[in-house]
Length: 271
Image (cartoon, rainbow, N blue to C red):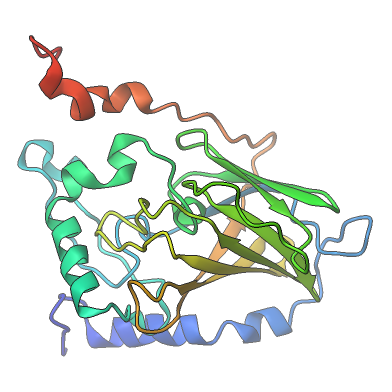
């Protein structure tokens, strides 16, 4: 069987891309969408992505982590969520991505418990909650206690008063699809642990399309002229958590990162 340079079989990569490029079939056949009081799809609930995109949004083989973490710190193999599996970096930006990858065990914002940004918050391996209203939609993430408000006034959006990790989001309904424009980012977040990143010029257009009562097709189109030569898209399903009384628990991770960030300033290490 022919393999790619990254070690994944060609047939697996082709199948992955084919599935990513043909989501419309599942959506078009759907006629079982729960609806809110105003007729829009009811997205209220706890949702979660299944996959390895938080490690690397592109196809990737298994690989080792820090030597002292053994198998528990290794990277699982995974199929990418980037449509076409290619990210159109500018040459100088690709060099920065490669530097990020080399320094990922100290520089990834996740390891420092910084907020994950958009779209990464959506496909981290933790559940998140959607609370849906007619004028505002809240998205609550456990990691680093991150959250965002989607202002449902996309036609007259207010610019972000200050750049932040999670940016400012404005949304509207396109039929049964919730479309969100997000901008006003601080340029410090990464897309994954592999070092893929964007600048403060990042603009993300998200689409949440119900595939049934318990699944959403999530798409995020990435635009950033500083880092990329053209827009590109992430696509993956989100699944509703069906446990009784499913919750999003606060993942207060700041205390776990203090030694990493400030340990060199201590006279005597605490660990």
